[in-house]
Length: 231
Image (tube, rainbow, N blue to C red; front, side):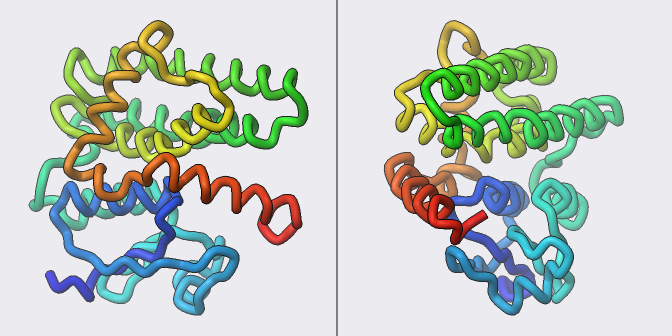
């Protein structure tokens, strides 16, 4: 398939955009990456995602697909004969992976964001504790889903690996900027080692942002939010 037949509208710091890019890499699909500018939305984005007006958007043969985890499932199905399956083949395992992916987006990501927005040391400490509690639950899910193998998906990166792994850049930034350990060898030993394997994987390493670069972006983002120019 020609590279021009597949496009991704996104931005390098976005964990949601990373999900689409990792899925395409797993399936060995070439694509054109169209970088959206910070604080503005292109006409193509507004046309392709008129409902939410957000990245990522996958455009395949001029047809847009929106929402990151929907894109991952679409990529898995559209290129089912190329590369390993991303979603588990067993219906129950698929349901479990989707459950924990929703948990990551609905519980862990808001907890992660609340650390940066916490007002005062006490509020920040409470936010950190809340996130760590969530990570401990995910540690247990990792043990059960991986069944002794390197990833949530087994021997290779799967749906839940992509869902949670896409946040690791921001987890590292949060650790760096707040001088705290969120993933460690004591409370979350499985996730600690899994994170290293995930970031080193060939499908991930080229799209995972460097921590220092992402931290600088986080500072810019914080200033924009403080000025009311970003929501």
